[in-house]
Structures are given as structure tokens and as C-alpha cells.
Image (cartoon, rainbow, N blue to C red; front, top):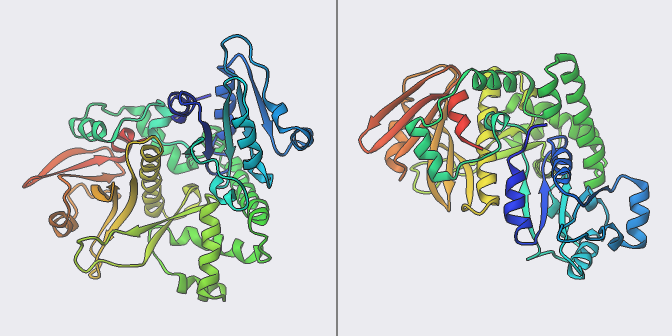
Amino acid sequence: MKRRSLDPVIDSSAFADHKIAMVSGPRQCGKTTLARMMLAGRKIGVYRNWDQLAFRREWSLNPSSVVPAARGIETPLVVLDEIHKERRWKRNLKGIYDTLESPCDFLVTGSARLNIYRKGSDSLLGRHYAYRMHPFSIRELDRPDVPAPDRLLESLFARAEPAGAASEEALKSLMTYGPFPEPLFSQNARRTNLWRRNREQLVIREDLRDLSRLPELDRVEMLAALLPGRVGSLFSYASLGRDLETSVPTVKRWMAWLRDLYYAFEIKPWTSRIHRSLQREGKVYLWDYGAVPDLAAKFENLVALHLLKACHYWTDTGEGNFDLFFLRDKEKHEIDFLIVRDRVPWLPIEVKMSDLEPSPNWKRFAPMLPCRRSLQLVMQPAWKVHEFGPVRLLVAGAAEGLGYFA
């Protein structure tokens, strides 16, 4: 089993500060495997899943019974998987945490965003750190460490970690099978198709039903079926509403649920100091980009998820507040992505399938940004730095360039 990038972070931040670690993320991205790997490194620990009937009975009678007795100086680890399905889970967990007689580490995992369940329950404010787990990326397939933002830029432009054949093979596998562990490691097209169909049914037919009580699950399935064809394009709720024969507010509500369940995510345009920028329309991407049929859109989606993973990792580990946007004006000039650090543009990224020359759009947007480094990613191996006054633009192959990110 490959060690995940969140493993050392949880140990060095949450558990070192005696905080509850809450790990949310898409279904089947490896959260349970992460928990079991962390348990294997402890002499004392237990794994409990809310779907187990025996555990539900045990929890209802005495929630504190999940904490094993400490032995010597060893700190127990308690993993609570999908515990947020229980209505009073936060109140009970807070009670256990506040009345501990000896130190105990808690790892809470869940496939839906855990903060959805804060309504109607006591807050764990000050008692937990939250982490967002992603499926595999090029770097994580090779190593679990993630560079800090400033070190990433220095290493990237200095080409401190040249890519080899393994990185190119990783990119090929991710493009073919997607980023989720089971299809990625099985490398079997038939099994991948079955896995993808089952996952979509789990997310919509089970998770969405349990979370929202929506009666229109068939319509939401139709919406999910339309999304792969809209990846990377400006996202129109009105157009989807016409296709689904429903209102725009209804489509927005359905999309909000799909985002909460880690099925899709949306990136908005960055508007600050961008002349004639778009104000509202965003772009939609899938967590499982293996389902995207168009090769160029799939590649853009792969880059989007790599960048989002880095933003989430740096934010959740205290490096600052990182967000992902894109740049586009009303004349349709566009830069595909912009990483913003503490509300200041930090790194713009353009994505091209095979164009090794700098995009003409750099001349349009570069003067409007405070960034002195920019990145253009292409499918094939490449590495060349272009100078535009004070701005350095790196045109790099995605296998190598993305290998510096999370």
C-alpha cells in the first residue's frame, strides 16, 4: 500500500496538538486504507464503522466504550468511519473528548463533507483539524511528501526534480483509468467501467438520498450524465435547466449537492483588477476525470484536480488560504487556472495539448497580475523557460510539471 501525503501531516499537526483529525473526501479515494495504515503503526487502536450494526448498538449504549484502555505511554488511536451518519455524533464525540482521563487520538473519516452535519449538533470548534483527501496524483504515486508553496516555485523553475519514465507512465495511467485507487491500480478497462458505474450509483442513489432526501434522483442522474460533456467549458445553469426541463434554482440546488458529495467541483473567474473580466460563469470539473470522453477536456480536468489538491493541502496544513480560479475576459481571452494565495494572485497556469509556444493570452493577462512566474503545461515532455520582462514563463510537460505539486 502506498503511503498517502496526509499520513505524516495528521501525525505532526493534529495528533501532536491532541486534536481530532477529520478527513473528508470522495468515496473510494483511500480514506479507510489511510486509517488502517495509521492504525498499523500503533500498538493500541480500534477501527469502528457506522455501517456495522454491532458498533451502532455499542455507540448508542455507551459512546465512551470505543476508547481502548491505555497501556504505558502508548497513545491509543480510535478511527470512526462514517460516524457523521449518526444524528448526535458531534455531541457524543465532544463528550468523549472532553472527559478523557488519558490522551487518545481520534481520526474521523467520511465521504461527504463533514461540515454539512454541523446543523443541529454541538460544535467541535477548537477540538479538531479538518483535512480534505484527494485521490492519487502524479507526485503521490511516487512519494508522500508535498513541498511548501515557496519551495515548490523555486524547485520547479530550477528543475530540481527532473522527471523520469515513471512520471510519464503515471500520467498515462491517470489519463486512462482516472485517479481513484481501485481502477488506477487494477489497470483493467472492464473492471474500471464496472467500478465507475457502481460509484455513480453509490454517490447518487445512496449518499445523495441519505443526505438530501431528494425525490428526483432520476433527474439528478441525468444531470450527472450531462456533466462529462461540459467539463472545461463555461458552465450555464440556464442551458442545463432547458436540457433537464427544470428551473435554474433547482439545477443550482442539485449541483450544490453534487459538489458536497465530491462528484464535481466548480471554478469561478478571478475578477479583481482584470479588465472586462467575466463576473459569474464558472467552469465545472469532475473528481473522476476518467469519465470525461474528450481527451483535451480530460487533460484539463486532470490538471484542475492536481492544482485543487495542492490548494486544499496547503490550506489545510496552515500554509495560507489557497484558492483556484481561472482568467477570462469578455473578448474570450483565457488563462485556464490561477492559484490565489491569501487573496493575491500567486501562479497562473495555462493548459495546452501540444502547443510548445507561449499562449498569446499571456500578453493579455500578464500585465494585470502581480505574478512574476507563470506555467504552461502540455501533454508531451517539454521544458523551456521564456522571459517576458520581469515575468518568467515555464513551458513544461505535465508529467514533470505536475510532479512538483501535491
